[in-house]
Image: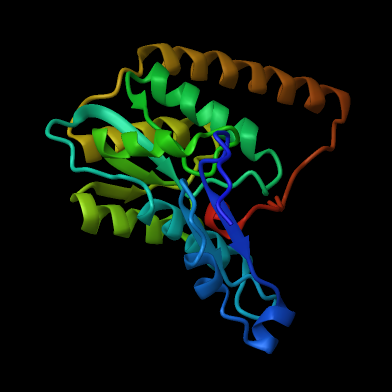
Length: 227
């Protein structure tokens, strides 16, 4: 039965373990429907793979249904961010900070597939960027390779940096891939102030606890960040 819903831009049909065991032809059922919006069918049975595999499979299916056309002229300072997922703790805050840093450095941020509130039609602007930054290979590398094959769009695996100097190095690396120089004067000043504040706090702690020393640091991070 055909049902028009102007608010629907994509219908995702997720199968379950029981459907897989029974052997229902979900693709055939979906293909028999007459809809004005794209429909994707995903095997979401609990024994078919890890979360990361399912994420990339779903993202690829979505990208294949978006009207992606090679850009006649790309913005030389524009990047897209691939491999983002709001499932991870503090992910929305990390994404907001990465966008801020890129913009402060003079780059333009395009779209981030997977970001909350992103409309399907916004993905059609993906080709206008000169570089796709893969924030997590486990989530975004397949999409980056697909866009490279489909659009000839370059990509770079640049996982989110931790630490002030690592952040500046991350932005410089982005500039290297784009063959442009980042504008780092303002951020370098920000780093200087931050490091001075940290040093003051450390000195205060040392004065408070005379025998304080740190011999081991333990980081609890996703494996792509932990490096």
